[in-house]
Amino acid sequence: MLRLEPRGAHSKLWTYASPVLAMALTVVTSAIIFSVLGKDPLESLYVFLVAPLVSSSGLPELFVKAAPLILIGVGLSLGFRANVWNIGAEGQYIIGGICGAAVALAAYPADAFWIFPAMILAGAVGGWAWGMIPAMLRNWFGASEILVSLMLVYVAQKIAA
Image (cartoon, rainbow, N blue to C red; front, top):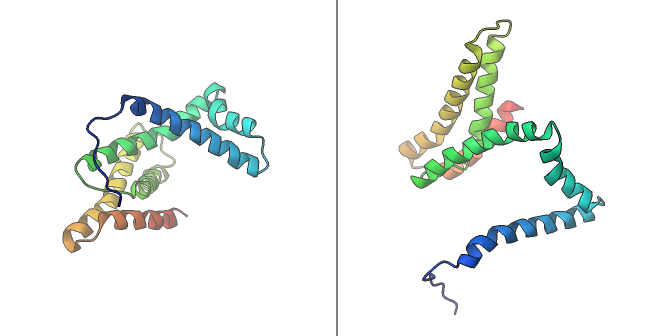
């Protein structure tokens, strides 16, 4: 019978080698998938990994797409440290975007300085309100916040569609 035992000390080699190994396996697996799909693996990997970093519009576009995901990751890390599990951050992101867009559409012909801060505030409040649903259901009924927040992602996607 096998037993799992904790290590006495972490391996310094694998601390640095595991991310490198993960990236190498990702590149190899991606190349295999592209080959199976009938695409040139080197060209495909160039398009995904190098082109966004060297083109004039690629890097700003990368930052536009990465910034909300980084913000979500930082917010989730705070919750995870507090043992609060939220798997449905994508739904909160969607609802926040809808609320921010609603403010922009409501103020459409206007060109005032307050519109952008109001959009950010509405997006934050919308995401917060969507995140409060699993929290309230957990406090009131003992529902699993993991499952509720994950299922609310699909509801948010349907609302956005």
